[in-house]
Length: 168
Image (cartoon, rainbow, N blue to C red):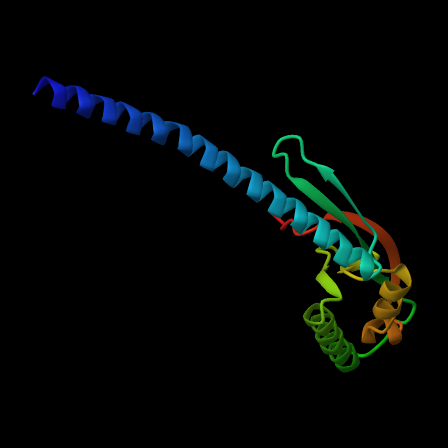
């Protein structure tokens, strides 16, 4: 009986040692695989964006150790234009066309966010264009029906933001 207890104890001891050493190794391998997948993902995203002409750079966030890709976007400031004397019917029609146009830009992936300002100042709103060049952003912004009618005019600036970060 003593032999059985000793053999059983040795077996349990060996088995418990084996499990304790395997788990951390599995976790380490899993973390390494995840890190390599993340690096590959960052690398492939950067390559995809640069192949389409976008300006990008990356950095490592010290808190999270995540690699953050920064992309250049273009903000179009929609300012009061020189021709604002349309009657109410014309202004409403232009507003409907303007909203439809911005919706189309969003659906096509050219604009990521648009909206009016809440005051009655000279700058009426913004659109953030997700396109590779300022010339393209300028062309799209100037094709807006409100801009073409002279009710709004455009001022565009390059703007950098972290790729994929949501508004809060």
